[in-house]
Structure formats: C-alpha cells, structure tokens
Amino acid sequence: MKVPFTWKVTGWFVIGWSAEFPIGESRALHYLGEELAAYRDEAGELHLLTAHCRHLGAHIGHGGKVVGDCIECPFHGWRWGPDGTNRYIPYQPDRPNRALTLRVYPVREQHGVVFMWYQPEGKEPQWELPDIFTKFPEFDGDPDDYYRPFPEFSRRAENEPVHPQIVAENGPDSSHFRYVHGASVTPVCLNWEMVDNEWRFLTGWPDVRSDDPEKMSLRIHSHFSGLGFAISLFEGAQNHRLIFACTPVDDERSDLFYSIWWPRNAGDESDVPPEDVRALVERRFLVTVFEDLNIWRYQQYVEKPPLAKVDAAPYMAMRQWAKQFYEVPPAGQAASTA
Ligand code: FES
Ligand SMILES: [Fe+2]
Image (cartoon, rainbow, N blue to C red; front, side, top):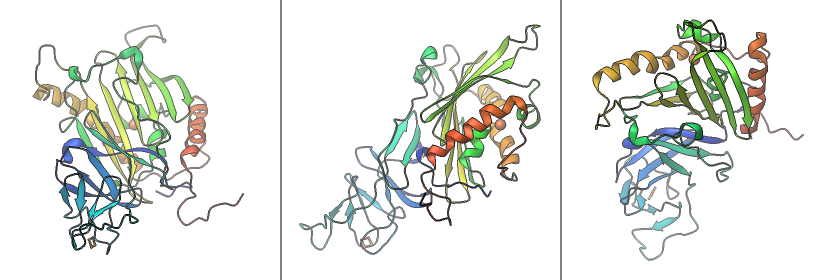
C-alpha cells in the first residue's frame, strides 16, 4: 500500500512471543527496514542488536552462538555484549576492540509478548510500555486468572501490505463491523481522547433486547500506545483482554500480531485453554484479523476521505495524532528544510 508517510514509525512494536526465543539461541529478524539479531543469554535476558558483525559483516542472527551474556559471530568468533560493545576477539583475547559497537534496540517482555522500541535515530524510549493488566485501573486484572495467550490464542500474519496507521484507523470506523465482521448491530463510539502517545476510545455495542438506545451489552475499551499496537478490554459477558499489533517489516509490509487473554473457567487450574474455549475464541475473535485483512490487502489510501458525519471527527483527529510518530519523511523523499 502506498502511503504519504514513513514506515519507519517511532514507538513500541511487537516482534514475537517469548516462547519463540529459547535460552541460548539466536534468531534473525527483520523489522522497520533493519536487519536484526535477537538472542536470549544464559541468564534468560533477551537482547536485540543490529545483525551485521562489525568485523566482516556476517549476520549474527544466523548461527550466532550464545556465550554467557554475549553473542558470538559464526564467522570468526568475535563476541558482542548486550550493550552492543565488542567483548572478545579470539586471536587477541585480552584486547577486544572497544570502539566497535552494534546498535542496541531496547526490548521488553510482558505476559509472554516481546516488544522492541524503535526510533529512526536510535533515541531511547520516549514513553514506557503500558501493561495490559494494569492499563485499565477500574478493571484491575491478575494474569494468573487467564489462560496463556500463546500459542493457542495468538495469531501472526506476515508480510502484509498494511501500514500501522491503517490498522489504527479501524478503531474509529464503526460502520465496518456490520459488513466486515458480520456484526448484527452497529457499534457506537461512546468516547475518544488523545493523551500524548495514547489514542483511547470506548466503543459500545447497543443491547438489542432493550428499548433504551443508551443501553449497551458490551463496551470495548481500547488504548493505542503509539501506532504499534492497541490493548483492549472487553466489558460484557466475557471479560477478556487482547493486544493487536502491527509492526513494519520494510517500506511496504508489516507483520500483524494478535493475542487474547481469556479468563480461566472457575476451578480450572491449567493455563492451557480447554478445547471448547479454544473453539469459541477461534470462531468469535481470532478470525476477525483475517476479515480485516481481506480489506486491507487490497485497499488504497485515500487522503481526503468523504467521511460520514459520525466518523469524521475521531477519524481526522486520529490521523492528526499519528503524525507525531513520523519523525522522518517517507522513503525516497528528502527531509524538508522548512
Ligand atoms: S564477521 Fe564476525 S567475526 Fe568476522
Ligand atoms: Fe475490524
């Protein structure tokens, strides 16, 4: 999809699930146009570095070996530390080249989900990562009361032609639910606000069994943290939480990540969801990403959309808010000197 803004978006982005990064293993990743190498050191800490070794350019995510808290390049055995510095050169063991460093990307793991911080010039995180279980103080949750999100309740769609802003635009778009998701009612936007890096909205699903149009059978509280992901809490018959994330791969594509935390059945001691719960969540929720994708894959970006009155204000406000995460011009366009 061609968009008039950059794919090198500033913010926190999901890059996978903790279980995909076992202790002592390295992995090659490619996000935000960068070649990356992730490794979990022997103490269990996860690290993310620029992939190409500063010696002769080998990719340390392909065959890099974990040694203590370092990663050893598969080409000539130079070792790199979690702070990106050169720690060891085999043929001059007492003289590492301390001036050589790999760029380090801040990573966080939260409830089994892995996030990276990205800022085009390598600046430190500009805001803290919100926690899905404390984000909505009026609905405090204990992660132990939920089934594990991975792998049963997680989905990834790779290399989709979708920019994170397009995913975010889905939030204030109330009328697509009926068509794309087969909803029997059209949800209403009850509230929306922008607070710094957050775009928050509250959507209500009118209760069809009530004559009172104000009565809602379900409320969805969603907070975007930058453009990378939204966390949502469903307030209704089932009170589950979810994260929906879009991480640019390069200047054309993104990976989408979706995880659901579903409350455990009373008395169930296992964190693995039982078959009937899995089937329900699959049918009702996990499919929705792919329904949206059917639109996004073929959609064209419209800069001045003729919006319906109900959608116009939040939609345009959201686009305005999104601009703070575009710190560089789109690819192929020179930085403006204005
Ligand atoms: S290229 Fe990495 S040690 Fe030589
Ligand atoms: Fe949708």
